[in-house]
Image (cartoon, rainbow, N blue to C red):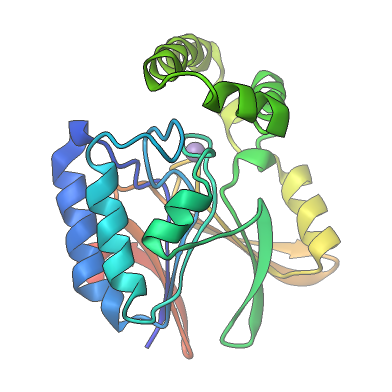
Length: 241
Ligand code: MN
């Protein structure tokens, strides 16, 4: 038995093959796990729990079928699906976690998060994030019609892709200082996150002890999964499961 971690599945009808791969994963291989953690950007766009465009209902139902077996599934908000709310949690049976959470993985404490908060050099994104995570702003946004929300989201996306194209790559990666700070604060030696789509296991020294940062890749190119069992962990692909 193992605990599985995935991130950045970015489900959208525009990539129907990934939707099929992910649902097949929920229906088969995920069932043998002890627990599943989804570390953000499960959906490419989630405009609120009433956003029922395909494949949202189909995926929520597949998650519900999995959680109904008793398997715990936890979901972290990403920068694409930070509006996943209570109705989604109730329908899917998933537990929504906070921005950073320390969990116990077979006796090892590990801090899990999406990873966007670690990209502190991206000042524009961090101020955008602060605004969009403000409960009053969210309430205002959610009170608009779905059409209006879709329009606003499309504008933001086109602005942000222009902005990203102009940014040097390292600005959009995590900063070692941010990693160091949060791991010290939470007193952990293991950090697991996604967001950057740069799958890797980074070993480094923290407080003169060995520390590890595991970065999950995305699904549309990498179908990345972290498999952690009693014997240890490995970062692989769904086909390796
Ligand atoms: Mn992300």
